[in-house]
Amino acid sequence: MELISRKDAKAQGLKTYFTGKPCKYGHVAERLAGTTVCFECKRARNRKYYATNSEVVLHRRRKCYAANPEPGRQYNRKYREANREVERQRNCEWRKANPDKVLARAAKRRAAKLKRTPAWADSAKIQAMYTEATDLSEATGVPFEVDHIYPLRGKLVSGLHCEANLWVIPASLNRSKGNKHP
Image (tube, rainbow, N blue to C red):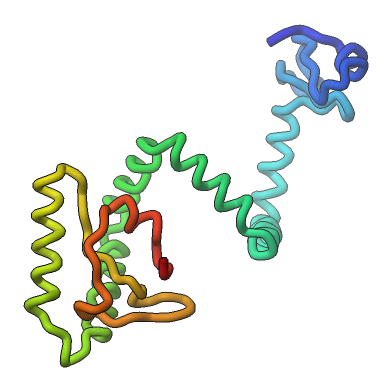
């Protein structure tokens, strides 16, 4: 880290500076040029505030996200792309730590599928689509999945589990589509 005084940092229009000297609490860290508070003190104060006001903070974040969700989605997307292995490992650990929730989610999905399978659905054609997805995956080396065109539990519209509502698509496209109609 480059040593720079507060006066020089302000003259250069910088928001932070670093003197290499400890703050009054003993932290040797960058400081804010406007307030002279070191980052470690600020971080500790933020942690303390969050610990005592977590419900208020969460409410504010949810309210802000609900009013303008796109920046949060973009941030999350960039983070996941930059940290694929970390996310994969975190998901794996979560599934191992929460097998009951994993089973409950799978059971809920099966129940939704059964509930939305009409009596007139052609089970042979449905099975053929799943076979086609498996064959395509083996032939190309690219994972394919059977996707519901209209999701079974969509927010705006829900579809049926029948051959007319299914298509075979690459898994990456299915994951990016999520629970939405294309």
